[in-house]
Image (cartoon, rainbow, N blue to C red; front, side, top):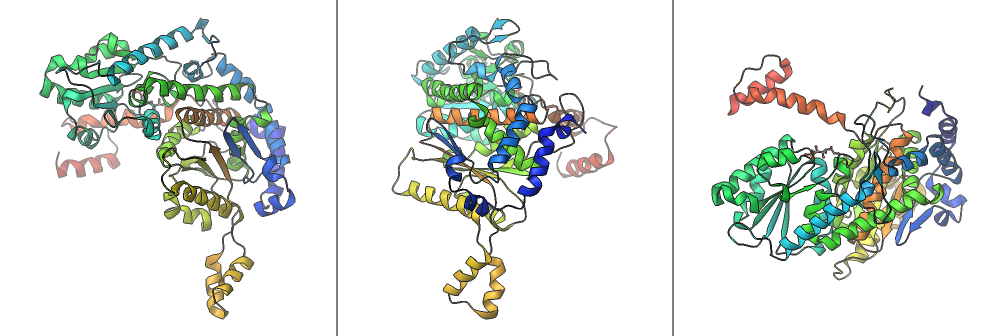
Length: 545
Ligand code: G6Q
């Protein structure tokens, strides 16, 4: 057994969970008239309601003991202090420095990184203004109307999600596109509607070696050169990377490269120059408001006591659901269409960070770790998978994310959206008992065998745990704060589970194998492939290659 499961806090939680598992949210609300007030927390206009989670005061008390025992606060302080907490890559983890608006220095290996951070921000500001004001022109003297970000994973998901979420702050005359997949359909579809004279490519890659990104970047370059000639590349390509040499090798000059640092993990990099498409699409001032919002959450995470610290509370509630109630997944349900990419973004942030089974000390875990994260915006999701949430057999904790006010204010749409959010969280928590269902059927005129036959299908067991996260309106500031809330929640859980949340060795194996297989598709003889792969390869070759 690991020291986590042997520890007093874990063992106390297991005993507590045996009692708690059978309790229904109806009962918990019935037993405590002040439950709503006791389990809701805030930070400015951000309001988080844990009252529909299956926790009691005692549960939270025991979870806090677990956080103390696993050193969550000390580990958090190590991150902010620039220590090399990414142990397998021997790196600091300092996305918080990218949005450090406090004026305080942040040191990595004895050097204050803030001057460099500010220098890159100043360059981003300058470049963004040039493009948006039409000072920056393409090779033929045209203004830029389309920005194409070429990147994948952390160099795509964050900026793509944010630009989509902040669309009311974008201009129709400067569109932003994202190409990530090596499947040529992705690039081809975007390029079909673009004019090279007005297109600016941002090649975003920390390493500048990622196969998908480099393949797409080369094809985009060919597309441009075929139409405008080699000399046009300089006016239509910029790079975001830590690898100046490879950027130069691609033909992008140093003054059109925006750098960042090895202490910025890919999935935590949207706050760095990787956020360039956000600044181009929404304006640099909006980008800094995003940083301000994230910084507000950083300060809260760094200083708030554990019993009102939102990322710690969220992390603990998630651990309770995962390890003690046995939930396999975590649904993300924004009742905010602008957050339609948020679940996809969080899938990477959470599952690449905590989808691990080796502890930092190298031993295998003897408990479950990161949940499967998935979701879609409401109300759309209500008309697809909510059936399973209401009447299926799985325990599915869900986060409902809601703006009190709409940014677009069209008729009574927003009231209808909010009514659905309130209805769903109520239904998931409290369900419908046999008595209620029977009463309802009787009121509809059913009786006898017909009523008895229908009754089982009309039952809702409820007791599905949900957290409601409410903010006034989705602005760059509130979005930055929301993203940082989840980043730190993931941090808290990773620490409790004893993981290094900042490496991603799990994505390596597939990459290595693809490298070995590619020559076989290109006509070379590759001898050591397993029969299962050989078989599929032959099927594909016989079709067209
Ligand atoms: C994120 C991962 C991964 C990475 C991509 C792109 O944390 O490291 O998703 O962002 O593989 O890497 P490059 O930015 O180096 O192209």
